[in-house]
Image 1 (tube, rainbow over the protein chains, first blue to last red):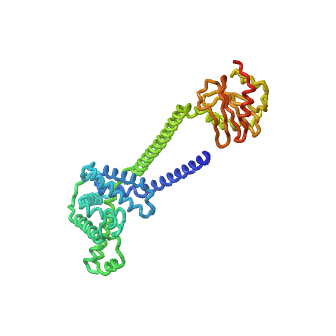
Image 2 (cartoon, chains in turn yellow, orange):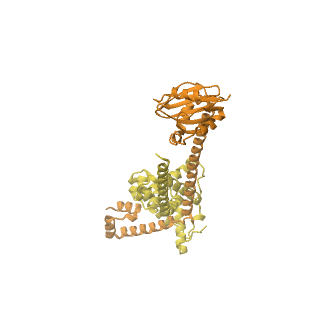
Image 3 (tube, one colour):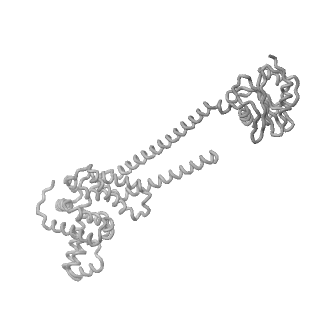
Length: 189
Length: 238
C-alpha cells in the first residue's frame, strides 16, 4: 500500500467514524429530549431528593450514551433507560456515597395548581406517595409516569404480573384511603 | 364479573378499562362510581407525580456527555500520540544503533563497494559524461596517481562519499557492460580485501601502496584484465 493510498483509507475511515459519531450525537440528544423529564420524575420519586435525582439521571444518560450502540430498537428506549436508571440508583447504595435522603418537602410545593383546594390536595397526595412502601411506589411510578403496562412492569422488576397488579392495587388503595381520611385543613410548608 | 374482580382490576389499573370492565360498570351504578372515582384519583396521582423538572436539565445532560466524549477523544488522541512517540523513539534507537555499528557492518570492503554501487546505480549506470584522460587524472591526482593512457571509455568519474568514506567512483566500459572502479584512500578502515559477489555483480580488490582498488562488474566480466590494465597504467607519484 502506498502512503497515498494508506492516507486515503485513513481519511475515509476518519470520515466514517466522524459520521458515526455525529449520528450517535443526534441519537443521544433525541433520547435526552424525549425522556429526560420522565426519567427525572422517576428518579425523583425513587430517591425523593432533587439533587440525588439529578445525579442519578446524569449517570443514567452518561451510561446510556456509552452503550448507545446496544440500543437497536427505539421503541425499547424507555424501558432500556429505566433499567439503567434503576441500576444506577442501586449503585448509589453500593457506594454508600449518599445518605438515605429525607423526603424534601420544600421541593414538592406545587406552583402549578390553580386553586388552593387543588394545591392542598396535591400536596397531601405527594406526601402520601412519598410515604408509600418503595415496593408499592415503584410499580405505580412505572405505570403512571412511564405508562408501562402490567406485563412491562413485571418484566422490568423481575416479578410476575399478578404480584405487580397486587402491588398496584395496594398502592392506589392506600392513596385512595389516605385522601378519604384527609384532614379538612392541611397547612402548607 | 364479580365485584371483587372488578375492584381489583379497576384499582390496579383504571386506565386500562376494557370492554368487559366498561360493560360491568354500565350495568352497575356503584361500579361506574368506583371507576369514575379511580379515574379521578389517577388523574390526581398523575398531577402529583408530575413534579417540576429542573431548568436546563436536558442541556446539562448533553453538556456532561460532550465533556465525557471530549475526554475520551483526548485520551484516544493521547494514546495515539504516545504510540507515535514510542515508535519514533524506537526507530530512532534502531537508527542510532545501526549508525553506531555501521563501521562494523560495512567494514567488509566488498560489501562497502556493493552497497555503494547499488546506491548510485540509478544514475551512475545511465549517465555518460565522456570523461577525458585529463579529467580522470585531475581526480586521481588527489591520491597521487596518474593514468598514462585511457585504455577504455570512461562514462563517469566523481568523488563520492558513502558512509563517511570518500572515494573516487569511476565507471568504465568493459566487455560485458559497465565496470565500476572505486579508488579508496589508504586511510580507509575497510577490511577483508578479497573477491566478493552478489546476485548480479562480482568484484575483486587490490591493495596498492598508495591507494586501494575495488573493481566490480557483471558476473561474466573479466575483471582481472581491467585491474591489471589499471594498475599497469597508473603511475603513482610517491
